[in-house]
Image 1 (cartoon, rainbow, N blue to C red):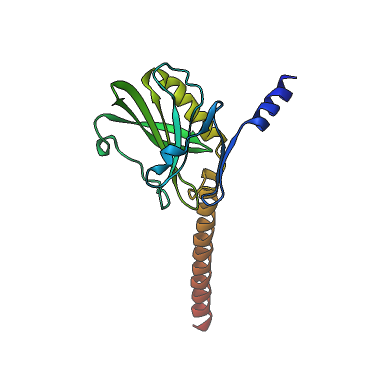
Image 2: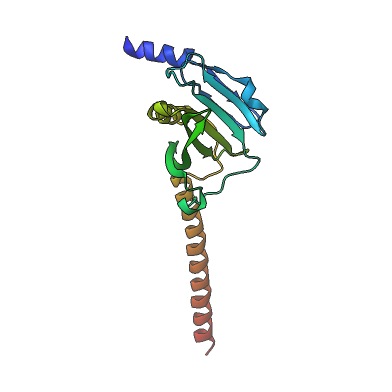
Length: 194
């Protein structure tokens, strides 16, 4: 019975979908459209808690386009502001880097979590922010959102990388065998002509 209820809950959960960028994910429960935040540059969509859990305000989740693909090179802590920490998130089998920052908004402490997702068509950034007293819940929500995010990546998985390395190794072995065969053939020909 609980499995049936869990499946029904998943089916009823609102999906955020963008065909142009090639992603789909389940919105956190209780989040509704927040179109006012879309006025910022390259902001694709935003959602906010309909009923904030904290007395200090609502959490906001946004997707921002990056207008390019995401390379695999990792950021370094010295490359980010001192008030920002590098954190990691999981998406599919990939370890994504993210940023965590505490900021002050209208005299209230707030957290900001950002991670970049290497989608094949174009990378996107996911932002989740809210009152500082909700940071642990925010991290859990962003983790759940990434777990539900579907889309093709421009990064190769470990199995795809090993498959490509296997193909490359196969070509090099084939070339080496061919070179050795030609050398042996020439050596035999020379020996036969003497």
